[in-house]
Structures are given as C-alpha cells and as structure tokens.
Length: 413
Ligand SMILES: *Cc1c(COP(=O)(O)O)cnc(C)c1O
Image 1: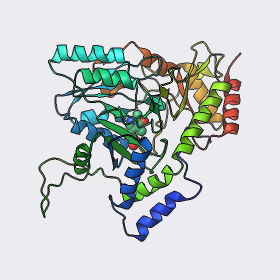
Image 2: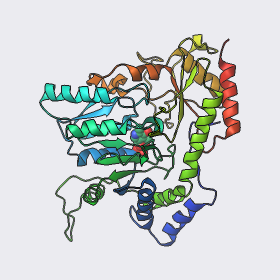
Image 3: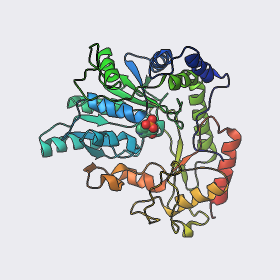
C-alpha cells in the first residue's frame, strides 16, 4: 500500500541512539536531556527569537496556547473553518466558543478580508473583542501571515500560528510557527517529522515559555510540597519521544526537500485535463513545505464507478484505529465530496494507493452546528472537489509515476 504520508526514521539510526541513551542514563521520564536537546534543535531550525516547549501533542499545544492567551468560559476565538478538529476542539475544552472564518481561494487558508469583517462584527454583536485568532497553514501552505498578523494586531488580538502541518514552511523568509504570540507544531506519525506522537509550542519570550512549561507539568507552585494555585495539565513530552525527535531533526531538511520534489512531480505529470494540482501563490513570500500534495477534480470529470458511490455504509473511520468507530447508520451526509472524488478514492484503493478527501470544514461538522461562520463558501467548494495525494519520504519518483498512471486510468474519456 502506498500511504498518504508516513514519517520515516533516519538511515543512520540516530533516533534509536538518542532513545538508547535515555535508557542507559535512566532518563525514562517526561523531562531530561533529550527534551532539552530537542527544544534547542527546534529553536535553531526555526531561527529567530523565541522559545520552545516540547509537549505530548499538537492538540495540547493549541490548548495551552489558548489558555495562556487568557481564553476562558464565555470568550470567543476566531479560527479558520477549513482545518482539522484539533485546531478548534481545545477552544471548547476551555468553555469558550469558536467563531469560524472562511478561506481565500489562493492559499486555501484564512481570508484576511473575512477576518476583519468577523472581528468588527463580533465586537458589534457581543461588545467584546475575540480573545485569539487561530490561522492554520493547511497542508503546509502559509496563510497570508503579514496581513493576518497586521489585522489581528490592529485590534490587539493575539495570534496562535497553527503550524502543525507546516514544519519547514516559510513566509517572507521566516519560519511558520513563529508568527504569533504562540506557534503550534505537531510531531504525530503522519506529520513532517515524528516523535511517534508529540508536539511543541513556540513562545514569543522566556516568560511565556516558563508559564507554558509550568501549566504542562501540573502547575506546581514553588514549595517543598505539592502546592497548586491553578489548574495544570500533564502535557510535557517524554524524554523517550524527544529522543526520536532529535534523531528526526538530522533528516528534517532532507524530508522537507523531498516533499517539495514530489509536489513538483505532481505539478508536472498530473496537472491539467480536469485535475488541478494546488500550487502556492506566485508571490515569492509563500514557501510551502508541501506536507501533502492536494488537488481538485473538475465536477464534470467522469471517474469509473462514480454512479455507485455512497451506497454502502462505511465500516471504518478515516485515519481511525480499530475499535474507535462511531457507526452512524447512514452512508451520506448533507456535505460530502463529489461522487467523482469518492470514486477516485475507491479506484485507487484497489490499486493499493491511499488518497483522502481534504479536511471537512468545521462549520459543516454536526458537532459545531449553529456556530457563527464568516465565509464566501470557498472552503466548502474545495472540500467537495479536493483530494490529498501520497507524499512523504516513502513516495519516490516511481511511486508518483504509478499514482499518476492509475489516476489517468480511472478517468472515463
Ligand atoms: C495534526 C494536527 C493537529 C494536532 O496535532 P496532534 O499532534 O495530532 O495532536 C492540529 N492541527 C492540525 C491542522 C493538524 O493537522
């Protein structure tokens, strides 16, 4: 099976060396030399000023960033609708309410115009300024960092730079993840680099880092006994996972270069005739890591078997793990990828190629029904036509050639 994106360990075994070191020195705990070393590697890699805190997941990073922005019950947070649920759910963990903002067609990310409209309208409607803005660099593509930061700054709203998928992406030469008061990274198994599971929070200064690290270790006050003045979390990264991360840092740039190479191949070999490979804007400030190559299918493109899709109940959840399924008893929803997209997915599955629909916009999720949304409908259109293609270190030129050949085969002329 050619998978969508699986991380790959270094050929030198660097990950195992760091993990072995942790065992040998008995640092099998959620702190230690690998955690410090990984944070320092990340800092160097991203460059610029700021601090890093390694955490147990990207979701934990979003949660703590919101908390440190002062988000609490009754507050509103503006967040890109076109994203994975992990960008949004932590707003709910805190008893606050998301307000969704739509995407622009070029980057597929937060539309700065809509952001400003949303800010003004929320202030008019609630008399309160939203507590944070969460733009997301989806599939590694930078959002318009300059405008988003400028608009949020104009209203004094902190930005949480959600770069879980954008490790190694840049905007105007500066690394994604460093644009906000906080920046989110993820090292889950399918991300640009992995720690098996893990994340990190970029903090603008040492004081914020101290606060985040404190919240991530159960908020222990300075006493010789356990004393707590705030609710904390057990969110620190394990020294074992951080060892994997340090090893991965030795191949990070090579992996990023490879993702960009694969993107180029898809642009060259697949683009056209009803299939549009999503590219970055011609504006040179945008520099994506191309974590996943994505494409959209023209509505009129005919794919083998498209008359028969969505007839049967699905017995697994996308990206899911056995036993975590929530069967709903229906094969369709009121907002789903077009029939030709689903037919292509099924066709390629037969060819041992995994492709997936793009993220379903959060304002179309039943769990967020009734949540305010400011949109031009761009993300819903992309969701209906979009598809994610295999990329990553396991996908070489031959695999891309095979994938493109199979896609051509699926098209009914
Ligand atoms: C993966 C991902 C996250 C969450 O990261 P985890 O480490 O899996 O918790 C957050 N946001 C986006 C956009 C992601 O793709």
